[in-house]
Image: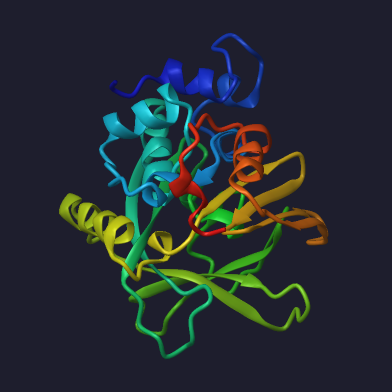
Length: 281
């Protein structure tokens, strides 16, 4: 199927004649924030297709068929392509940029461009970072760019962007919850929007096929809902508070049946049983 704004609204449980911010104030920063919240809540981040050995097609039509029609989730290339389609249809100006993931890496480690973000302008704002595809560390609101070292308080921690001295790369950082003097890098992207479609296709192909890529080596599902983050990483389920960061629940996933119950009932994803889904338990 091709992308349909009506299908997207239906998937996000929105209706065209409601009085929500998204529909009553389209193409505004408040509507964009509400739209991010809805997609993060109702379309979980997940890499189950990769775990099953499938290749990810990041074309807008394939993404719409999977995430809207089949009611699955997806990883960054799918999540942000879907949001790109929706925002473009709603009148926002949107471009994509590839980033080097820095989370969990040492300062001297060079990483490939394996994550995609959106750079968005609307009728009452310009130059905002928007990302619904960074899993458990996702900032759930748009972030203003062009304000180096200006700390931004969000509902899930404190984020800031820093551009290097040469003006070539901008890095998104998050404040350490235990030591407020420390900011940890999440990912970095080129200030110039240099990417072309083949760059995104190649980065996506690497991410879903390379044996040592992050998402070929683990099972991961995540969503943000009701002031909480939920995620499964391999054989562990965790639920924590957005406001405090407190872990509210943590338990082992010790069987395929338990895993499928969580995926279907906690994350709301439609998936058939397959023994390969349990290969990281």
